[in-house]
Image 1 (tube, rainbow, N blue to C red):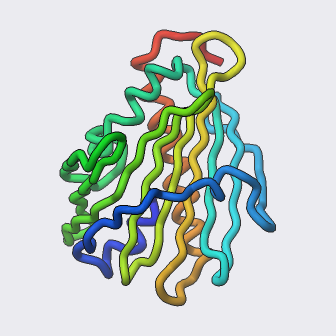
Image 2 (image 1 turned 180 degrees about the vertical axis):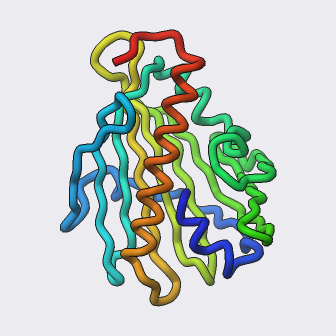
Length: 207
């Protein structure tokens, strides 16, 4: 969600939401020409993936294990009001049901001296062996921004394998490498904050 910071300065509102399903299947597999690195965030190892080009857009992904059972982590992940605590600059979050497993999440955010509102489509899916939260922002100025977070049971008691992947196809020519850098910084910072929060609330085995 760090890509917001690049675009908020040129966008003041979001258009009406689309009704078709959010396709994020392409985000979970390998991307063409992706670069993969192994990182450590605090005490936690993580796998980082990235790819950026003007033709294909900006891909960013992060995978790690969380010290929390899957069901508890699902409840935490789908509490969208927590964005106000986890994402810097968020002033207000409004969550509106749009049907079974579908939500409209409106975020009011302050960047420097400006305040903006963006509306995201969100889908929830509980599948065999995996839970998913998918989101999409479609905007004529920003372009198409999609993401997915998936949760799977990890080896060992009380742990969950977490994956997060995002993709932006800009609506106009932009410096995609700069956007990728901002997204990387935001995702890694978000992972650190998220894991630190889980350590305070999940009483499970830690690495």
